[in-house]
Image (cartoon, rainbow, N blue to C red):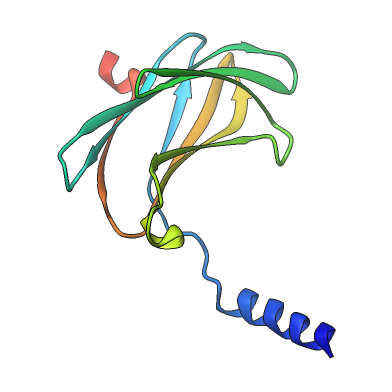
Length: 142
């Protein structure tokens, strides 16, 4: 009997669960050691932070990425293999309602061609708590 209720519970969760609403999204194409920046402004406090990242080394599958957020450096290895291609950075913590209050930035490694790495930045902000500005190094050089 418990298995029936558990199965029904799982089915209902999947039936009513919606897809994540990533808004905004942006795709960066970076050369080695070229910095990309995402400015994040919290609407409630007008506090402005930046998420900066670059890549330094690529072999046939893996890429080394460095990022800085709130002066805290991170060093990660991402891969073209599924499951190792995305990094999540929590922008605003989820205190009262974990599914709705959290704001997250997802950095995904998409491809590597012609000595350039392509990354996609997705912002998950259900409650529209932040403003986002993307600074692409290729557009700022032109």
